[in-house]
Image (cartoon, rainbow, N blue to C red; front, top):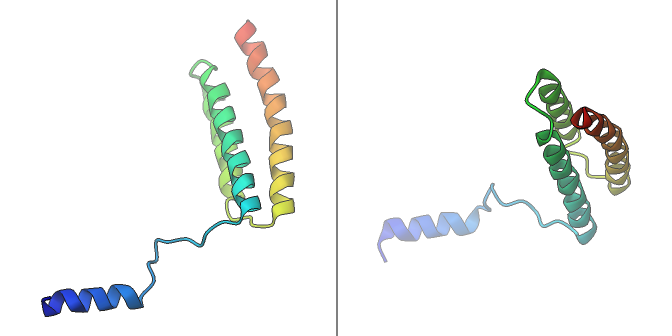
Length: 102
């Protein structure tokens, strides 16, 4: 083996990769799936709204809320955020359905 390849192999073994994140526990994984499902549901509902400033504002608001809480790790707080997010979404969904019916 060439010396440059041996050096590269030694360096890669001694330094953990910065891109690897620690594995999620089962409960964190499940909550993450719930969060992603809520996001997808919101985006799908907003795609039913005709392109308008209101649609853009609603999407920006939803994204801002998700981004603001991105680093929350406490499971009970994540559950709280998902449940309040669903409640807000249900309110928003009623508004979207009313607009679509017109």
